Length: 339
Image (cartoon, rainbow, N blue to C red; front, side):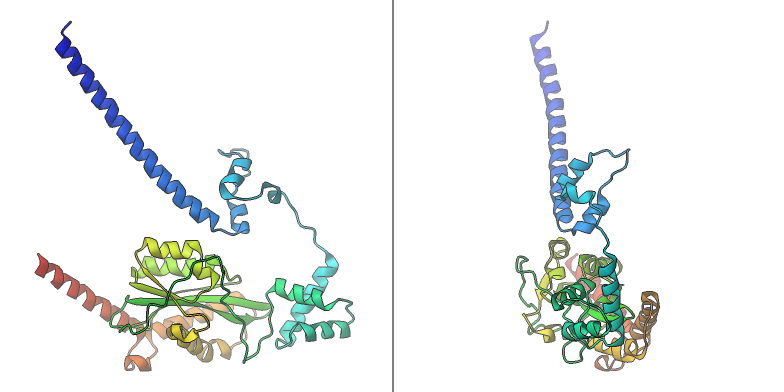
């Protein structure tokens, strides 16, 4: 036996084992980061979305109990089947009919109307049913509020005061508005580029939740890159973990309107006014699909055909792409000068 040779072989084998250990440690570290990231995303989902994710099939790889634990979902709720009360549903249907006929009625007048129509129901029940149906009196002086703050979510300061908007993708902003159709309300979210006034993405939904705001955000990011600053109001959808974290992950500065200051997001507010006056308020919608078709037509008109006074009567998308080309040329020259 040659001691020197044995020691050399031992060191070589030890080095190989150490390399494998380092590789495993990197893999475990990466999996831990990915797990924590996914856990945060899953925790931000509402209960209905969590329930959809759970796999109850015979060929599931993880037990239902373990899935519920990972999602933070109460297992007992998974098998709960709500009982439908026919009397309750009849009253709800009548409340919807009253809303369609007289949308300006609040719950007190709706209660009186129900009594007049022969329904024996108390005021508090009417108020609760209208809340469950998402119905509120439609009054020109008091439009439904689409921004409800969550006190537990962190808020961010307004970053646009005194900022000179000089190029596309410098500032984007977003908002949610309501649109009345037969049977109730639907909600529309959109993202606008402040410089060009171009609408970069939009979506209509019958629910006002994180799915709505994330849908328009992800679409805009995938099609148009990213802005330097993204401005919203302080609504719970925009202060949610999934929305703010997506902006942070893309190194986007988060800006939020001051409380009660709709004028801080005036760019998108003016667009809502134009869309409603020029298209939406001119029609009565019985189906969401009809509304979506009309809005799609209007978006095409607004972005590519409509002259915009604040743009010296140019068209938003023309201004947007012209600015992007100029920005790209400036970056190319800067890179050449640095090189």
